[in-house]
Image (cartoon, rainbow, N blue to C red; front, top):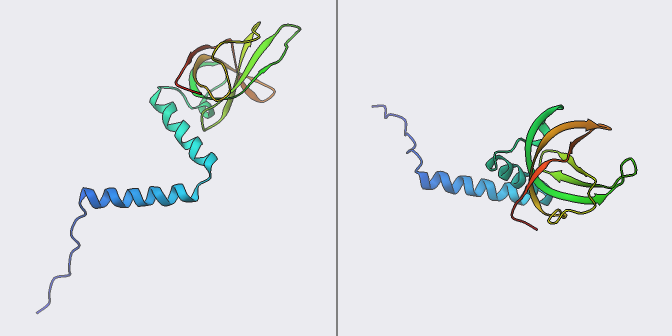
Length: 138
């Protein structure tokens, strides 16, 4: 008599969870710190209801969120302009506040959500005088 082939018992949720946890552990071990930070930023951007900077179209209003990498004072046309580089794990956008030398809370490492019209300048995405909201942070 032929016996039916042995069937594998279905995995329990606990086994599946362990397997996912182990897979995540090995991926984290093999990834660089920058890759892990980018992944974490992308997750938080989605939770805040913001658009990924990489998918922002020119001449369109968008809401973006991320971490400020740099903040510099750079004159434009003889007037002061505060520039901040916002990174969300997918790309970078420059936020420019014309006529401002300093804005309280706008510091490197700070989480920020900004809304405004995206334009391109010298091949880089820029948002002039965006509305912004400071998030938990530095």
